[in-house]
Length: 481
Image 1 (tube, helix red, strand yellow):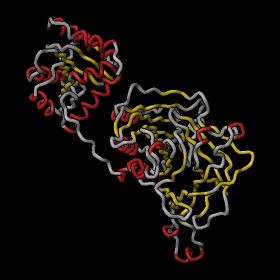
Image 2 (cartoon, rainbow, N blue to C red):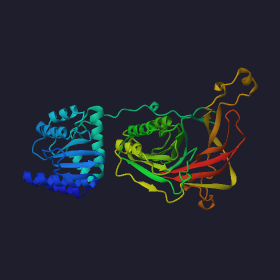
Image 3 (cartoon, rainbow, N blue to C red):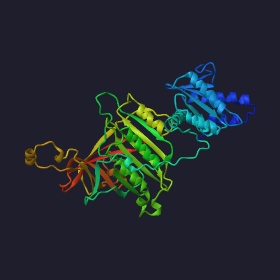
């Protein structure tokens, strides 16, 4: 992590031998840190009068009483008790104590802090964490929030220094919503995914592409990016689960996983996680030179109230399955009045930096069409079950007897060979994504659905829609029969 001026000043403080002078300069350094983290900071404030504390910082509606310690020995229980008494005098659940100790903490202090889960909360911040936030001041608010969550919810003191890393629970794919789409081969056998030749692109197919500009009011949609810090494959599962808990994972997400010469496309959150984890099986049959050290994943889903998001990540192609980059890009019809759900995701997943709503300067969704429809060679079907099956309709027996029974399953999309693969750029239709040059397959939405038991003689590609997010191109080819 790059060193900034706060980190440099912290290193210089180590050379100060006068303990009183070093302590005073350390308080000044913390004051600058919290100011740069956009806290309102007061020194020697009277919130816990008659006893003063080193710093008082406010972020939103929460006040923090901050005690700075740089001693030769770890902060002991006397320091903890002094901060606790000040909190008791403040008598407010919106005031939280923070002890920043460069020399660490005794075991007794850690045990006492874990016991305080009522109105008085004392958070502990050691040298390792201090060095991290000095290098990235914007991360202070998120770190304090995580410490508070760990203490209140789990009774654990969140401390990086000397802490043993906890193994992340392997979340089962059944924790994610079930897909109401089925992917079938031409023999109508179920498929987990379809695979084809291809390279690294940022392209992912969808069945529906919401236009966030298509609203009665003037103006344009907005984008909000959530860059996630490095974690592993299981962290992606936790991220999807958190999005699902907020109602942001539907039953029809689509995704793509890409290697140097091979791509895998599918539908469903559960299927995505299972396919991601089955990386060794997916690599069977690939030459060693065809496997890059990372694979690219792109996942797209919609909001029920309009808009969509893409999740793009680079995942290591070895047993660690570490995620080297991850970004969730939200495409919204506007700035929501209630931003708390978005803030919750930011805080829970250690978002890197500060999030900003950015207005879109171009059309959210563009639409193009072919001069003449192109015939398609089908290699798979996307099938949806009728949500209102005939057998469950409230009809009298004589009425039901007179009505023909409609089909329960409908083909709403197809997987086809790319009819424009290896097409010369000059001869490709205007607007056709260049990312498709190397892809052997496309996943199309059907303009007219048809029963699964009544497959037509052929399909043709007519139009396509596409949208651009920060890390992905979302494409909806539209075919008909």
